[in-house]
Each structure stands twice: as structure tokens, then as C-alpha cells.
Image (cartoon, rainbow, N blue to C red; front, top):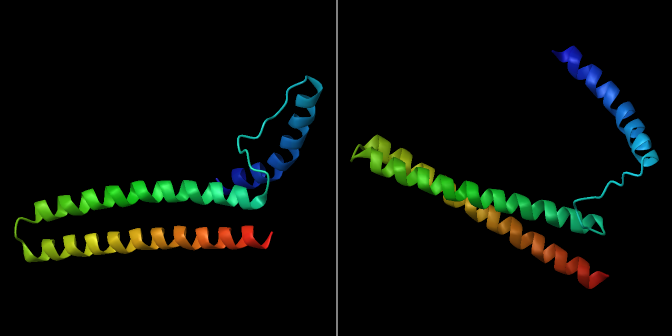
Length: 114
């Protein structure tokens, strides 16, 4: 299996440029789906997607923690596990929010310097 990966890693860098050369001959134009004009815009779009995925993950984790609370039925060990799950979910949401705030501050600072 590792041999297949090594072969693929060797062949792909050769095949991709060659296929793009053939595509240029037939008049096919490749259009970038990312409408960014700079690296900073690409990174911002990437982090925006990560934040959106993280928000969905936090929502699912809160629902799961709620399910654990209901399923505990008064069992102290299971209630403790549900509390830990909810606590770590809140910590993760705060980290996600903090990262978004820090990214916004850095973005505004870069815009001021330009």
C-alpha cells in the first residue's frame, strides 16, 4: 500500500502540469473558485470556513452533552462525564471565538499598515 502512495506522489507532479498543457491547446480555461487577490484574502477565506465548521461542531457537541445529561438519569458518574463534555465544549467554543477575534485584530492592523 505504501508503494502505491510513493508512486502516486512521484507521478502526480509530472501528470498535472502535462494535462494543463493539453487543456491549453483545446481552449479550456481553468478558473479559480477562490476570488481572492492576495494571500491574506485566501487565508481569511480559509479561516472563515474553519470557523463555520467549528461552529457546527460546537453545536453538535452541545447537543451531545445534553443527550449525556438526559441519559445519565441521576447516575453521578455519568453526570460527571456529561459536565466534563459540556465544559470542554464551552472551552472549545471560547477558543474558536478567541481565534476569530485575534484574526480580526490582525486583519485590521494589516489594513492600517497598508
